[in-house]
Image (cartoon, rainbow, N blue to C red; front, side, top):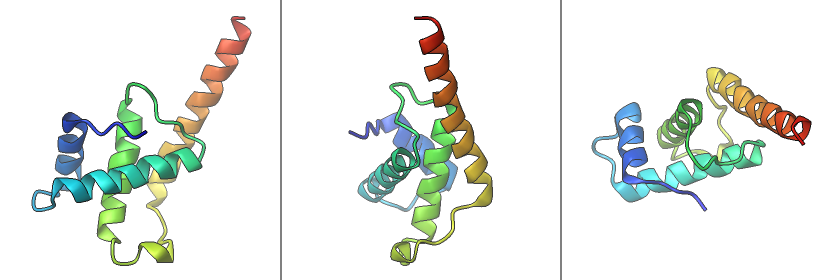
Length: 102
């Protein structure tokens, strides 16, 4: 379940400069971003880190900018790939640390 709080919504609105966009559209696009990250191997954390927020916000802006062409699988911004890879690595490290402490 995607937890889009009012603070997260406003943060995304500021990041993407979506002042004229309605809340429902932004929330739907943010939900798509969270689902994309989950599909890419990055689970939604209980507390969003700055990097996770950046990834969600950047994907939301990307989806908004390409909202008329989402079926065409338009390429994601290249810099976003590095952020997603770091988030994946965070999960790998957290798992390894957890296993080592057992």
